[in-house]
Every structure is written in C-alpha cells, then in structure tokens.
Amino acid sequence: MAWLARMAAARDIALGLGVLGTVATRRGRAAALAVTALVDAVDAAVIAAAASERRVDRLRGYAMAAGAAAVAVGGLVTAADVARRRG
Image (cartoon, rainbow, N blue to C red; front, side):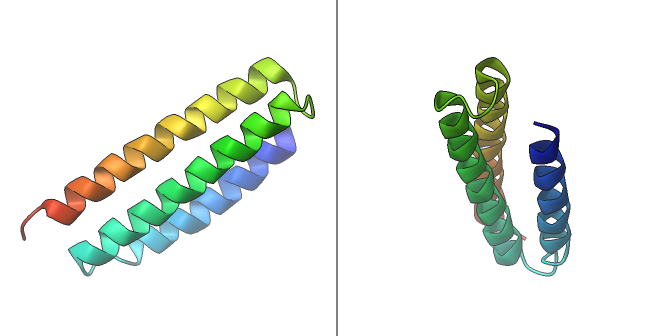
C-alpha cells in the first residue's frame, strides 16, 4: 500500500500544479478540476478492484477507494461551482 500512496501523491502533486497553471481563466480552472476529479474516480475504481481481488488488504483498500471516491465527488462539485460563477 505504501507504493500506491507514493504513486498517487506524486501524480496528485503534478495535477495540482496543472490546476495552478490554469488560473488565468475560469473555464480552464473548471476543466482542470474536472480532469483531476476523473483521475480520482479512476483511482477509486482501481483500488476497489484490487481490494476485491485481494491484491491489497481489503479493509485498507476499500477505505482508500472510498476516500478517493469522496475526493472525486468533491472535485466535480467544485468544478461545477467554478464553471457557473461569474467573474
């Protein structure tokens, strides 16, 4: 599980820098946030599948998958909010 956490952290840092690079336009920020949410959703699915197949500890795997899914939902909500704001 440690390798998975390190891999996800490194990728999330890169995605975060990408979001920061889009601060010039609201549309760009919303798109970048939506893409990062999609990545988190895929992470959730992959981790849940690994837990289901017992490739990782089931309890920890499902807990990580639930966390990634929650972050994905939060990202989509934030992207929608940024997209509809004025200014």
